[in-house]
Length: 181
Image (spheres, rainbow, N blue to C red):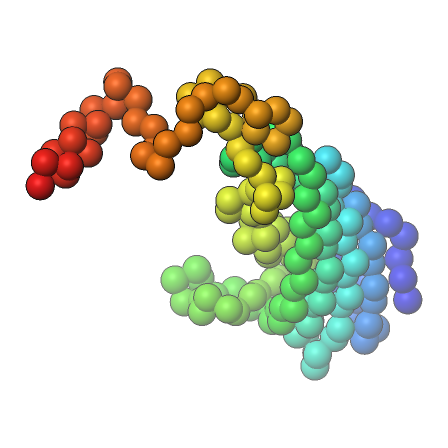
């Protein structure tokens, strides 16, 4: 049985007591999961397809597919571009009240009444965020001398095989020391 579209990843398990399977769709605002970063702008809400399967009396197996779209800045040319983020989760929750110190890293517990997968979804999406975002593998970036975006225009700066080291760089002395050896 599929429920209507929700805006949360909290599930009331009291209504699930006499069923073996439920499917949910959710459109969740990223801010509600603490997904707010300077480097990443969420363009769309999180689109979540969540399935709950009863395992025994109180254990619940959760399968969730989550997708969204974000805008990030290219690390070479600093132009914004959009990226699709997706993650798939498979989790088993058991009823329990173990303290945080006693829990294993891969064990999930809920109180028997409300199941919350928000933190698992948040962590899954964080792991999918690009660590070094490039608008294209062929991105030429910016000229280190004049700052021209080399994907759009060629610059007239002289190119050398030596990396440009600004005079104000305190480590520029090190390259001269290495040349003397």
